[in-house]
Image (tube, rainbow, N blue to C red; front, side, top):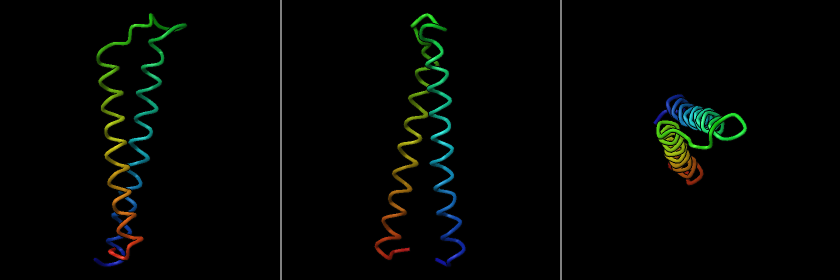
Length: 77
């Protein structure tokens, strides 16, 4: 793999982690707003599913980035 392509993939992987982190933050804020004092304390199923999906995407993004970083440190990239 050429250097430019490798850097582009690494950048995309890091951007995926950052985007996923922001989605978790946003989903958490939405979920948190459904608890006192602002909310009833009964979060909607949609808010819970959105938060769960955001957490899963973050986990997946981190795993992919970790794998890429491991390859880089092992000299396989």
